[in-house]
Amino acid sequence: MSDAPTPTTDRLRLGVLGAARITEEALTEPARRTGHRLVAVAARDRGRAEELAERAGVERVLDTYEEVLADPEVEVVYDPTPNALHGVWNLAAVRAGKHVLTEKPAAACAADARVVAAAAAEAGVHVVEAFHHLHHPVHRRLVELLASGELGELQRVEVDVLVPPPGDGDPRWSLELGGGALMDLGCYGLRTLRALAPLVGGDPVVTGARAVEHPAFPGVDAELVADLALPSGATAVVRSLMGGDEVRFSARLVGSRGEALAPCFIKPQWDDRVVVRTGDGERTEHLGTRSSYDHQLDALARLLRGAAAQDDPDLGPEDAVATMELVDSCYEAAGLGPRPAVL
Image (cartoon, rainbow, N blue to C red; front, side):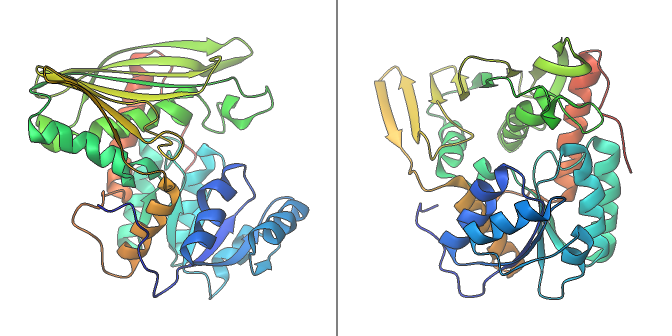
């Protein structure tokens, strides 16, 4: 797919729940670049909502999340709340008849994801999980290289997702709020593996996992390494770490004839390279630095306007259930157990 933006002829009308750190990078800035309306925002701290609205050009600030859900001009709700609250507010939005773009992971655990999926099916609305990187040409190129046969038979997938440690008060360290390195980081690697399913005979299966808990926050993984098997016989490892000395978002596909590396597969706008090594030599492909979040809004607009492209990824609520089942399996294999259900 081209790296050019999709022309916007029928703007999305977006409402925002909260003023989380990710909101401007993931939604408000892309919405302004792609021409969609930012209708309303509410936050627990109205002052933060007002500041966001002023910076981002949101049309109005409301007092509560419920008011955003009730706003007749809002058609899509963006949910960047803490992980364990995704299910709560996604469900509330669905019951209000709104479509949802939810930050990943879509729920605290698979049980909560199933509740939201059932409600969305009953209400006839879309709930889309924000694995934005799947919409970018870097991800698409990795899949193409494997499908083309240039890499040969897939033997190994290696994913490293590392960030420096968040501060102790960060919700990513809260078990009750669905914290943990796998929830925040490793889920990207798991969903990327699931994207290879049509080429490897199906979804991966967890064969083992090892976790290192944060000493001050029992049950919360500062690091989790998951081993997986693919139906084709290939193996995979996904390492997630909230405690590295750098940011690393790398994905490597190793085949019988060569390998492909995306050094920054989650944020390809930072580094759009795919490095391919085969018996014919090494080459570096550049796939475009347009934001993966802009591509995501393009895809959301196509979906809601009935013009989804054939190669747009399926990130609906049933897909979110399958991803959360894999997340839960990793936690079970590591001896921590899934994050607590809240629905």
